[in-house]
Length: 479
Image (cartoon, rainbow, N blue to C red; front, side, top):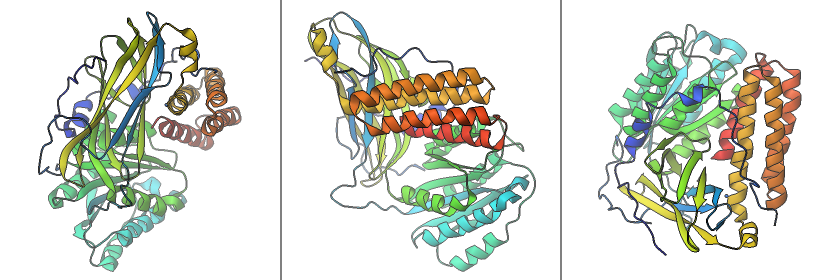
């Protein structure tokens, strides 16, 4: 079996986010309807980055991450161009019961604009900011930055020694004014950078309930800033509170910042969300994780579902950011495979480059997806990887939810309902073929949106809440 060599060498995964930053227009435009899914989608018979002590040379499987790549249906009919889902799993195991706990340097960047006075949001936010302090250890560092018309440091970066003093500083926060998100991010980044020690995990946690409307406010600049922070070893998580913020902007900030995005409907959830984010930050195993997918001449790239993928020759690079212990992340791509000779064909070389925060080395892990080229059509139909097929179809079916939501957001109820029906059909067919209960649940979730769309205008509070919930649901489905 002939294997081609990976063409992209090991080159500091931290720069990937910055390289992706200029490519910031697609998500803000309406998503076009997809091409029909492959027929059938499932057969009826898934620094400052820590400076490494050693730079590992480009060899496979040195790192802690486990990469697994394969096709949903591994057999392809010889001489026929066949569409397949390439499903990639990136997993960070806990490892023989060992719980990874890194010291963290966290800056909470809190919106204190006038809209935070509604529903007691500012009080919940202050309570959550104090809760995260109480949850941190003596080796951790904490800072708090607020922003309205201007950004200001409320709690300078400090070790967690005097919790009561920090709490009193938080109590003095008041709300009012506009939303200078960029200014808050900039000041929070400075607090972390100026105090970040070797071995610490740097983090910005942004909380906002409104649209950036003061200072630098265009989405491209905000997302580019997050990418630059990530390239310096500070991942960025964005938490959207309420229904008035721009979810696409915060989601893109988190994507290019290598962190997480969450929609928080109830302010009372803030303390639990903050604590969960702290726990994730403290157990990061791989930082600045970049996935390279390299395709040979007989495989044509079509698209990567959901992720912001940068085209690189015959394949893609995808910035995944932080991967914490015990987590599993997925990437689903559509490819077109043509096999000219029978036997095994390497259809994708997949590599993860990242900083290993446990061993403090630059590392990589890899896998190769293989197709079976055959002249037997029955073998093509019967050979299904049920796990990879379920994962792929979950991402594909829920893509219809995302497109339906965008159509609803633009007032096109007919198109929104059409996308829901088509997505539900894809998911139910896949559920029947794979026996995966998640696919059945996803199909029901799509169908439940029909009543929401018909009963609520997209500009209403319920409509805007549905838009945010649906987009977050789609993100979870393809990751």
